[in-house]
Image (cartoon, rainbow, N blue to C red; front, side, top):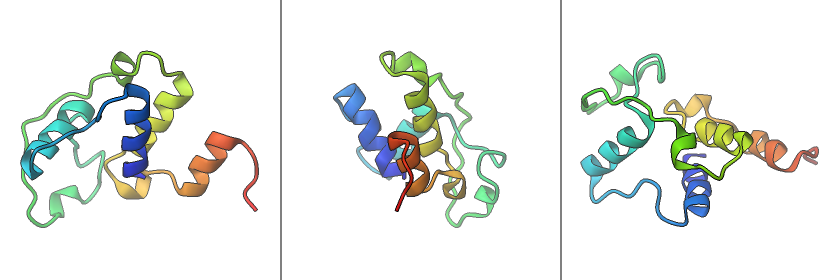
Length: 104
């Protein structure tokens, strides 16, 4: 679902949304764009192996970057980019959101 968010964002921006040169730069880029996650955003995050702490960065409003996107598109992006993978929508959730018809 995270990758789908990246592709969706890049289609709207017509440029890579979260480009990183290496692992640390990638994380910094993500946190600059989405804010630094907290234990409230991702319960259990503090227990992840090899966790690296970053300085807190606020989450800028997505509407400021995705100016042509409607509220539904912004809401979908925010759901796809949730740090906790268990809180991201499923493929069925996204399909019903995008196409508004039942899944067979």
